[in-house]
Amino acid sequence: MSEPKFRVAMLFAGDPRTRNTLKLEDTRLADIAKALRAVDLEVEPAVYADEAADDVRAQLMRVDGVLVWVDPVRSDGNRARLDPLLRDVANHGVFVSAHPDLILKMGTKEVLYQTRNMGWGSDTRLYRSFEQFRVELPKCLAEGRARVLKQYRGNGGIGVWKVEALDPRNPSRVRVRHAQRGSHEYEASLDEFLARCVQYFEGDGRIVDQAYQPRLVDGIVRCYLVGDRVAGFGEQLVNALYPAAPGASPADAPLPGPRLYYPATRPDFQKLKNRLESEWLPQMCRLLAIDPAELPVIWDADFLYGPKTAAGEDTYVLCEINISAVYPFPDEALAPLAERTLRQLRAR
Image 1 (tube, rainbow, N blue to C red):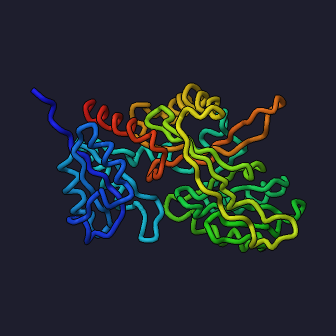
Image 2 (cartoon, rainbow, N blue to C red):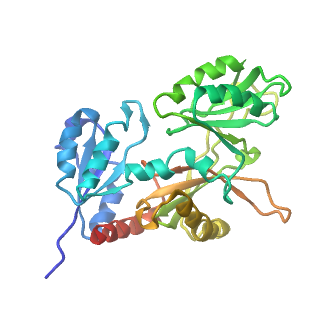
Image 3 (cartoon, rainbow, N blue to C red):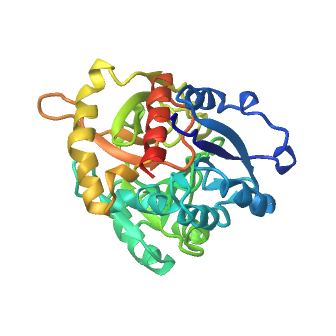
């Protein structure tokens, strides 16, 4: 007797009017759908918008699993209504990747603070209230190092700021730069900047504060993972937070370079891959009480270059973990993603 086919919904934000007509072949997720079908899964689109939440829930209750691509911050809203919906369908036995509870454990900026003492960690602080932020940030800036402030949940550089005191002895004026594309470096009073950050403490909001890494100019390395194994790499000059060249206008900082994709076999990233898989990932799972079997079918960990060792070797500092809407990624990750999805459905 042949095994029954599993049904998988691929959920992404879109126009709810297209829910009944949109084909996955006409979306950016077409290759993922093809890979899922190659392992004999039935795949269907699930177009999400808050006003269609009830219809989406009804659809998801009829499938065996749902893979989710919805950013935490979008021009048309956030995940405040979606996450409870996904928890509900998961409680009814539907496989959800990534589960909202897992996002809260490892997919917010707070993971940088919780894992600050691991090998990928750096000087990181956490401000849980605006009052704490108002009192402690000036003391931090008085230490003389530039800081990178990150809102609790976000994407696309939204709510990520580089901040440094013009005079650490009196940090009443600061130089700031927002990482969102199109932003420019400017100077402001510290009080003005603090007032701008009030919004990041709304609801369960908070701010994570990392020391700025001077080797940001060397780019960022993105490790794409399927479960607990690296399935490919990305590399990009992400220069939204580093300044313009000496003598140039602060508005003339270079644009980000293209993101390049590589298979997991790239030779010069093997030390990073091995350390991530064998040391850092198991340590993170223990620290955050995560069952490795619950890790998403696709996610990524972004690394900045830290100081070189005495022997001239690279070190790496965790910049963020993304699990809400990881795309694009190397083609080499497609088959492992599909195979892990099938295994998860069988296991349930």
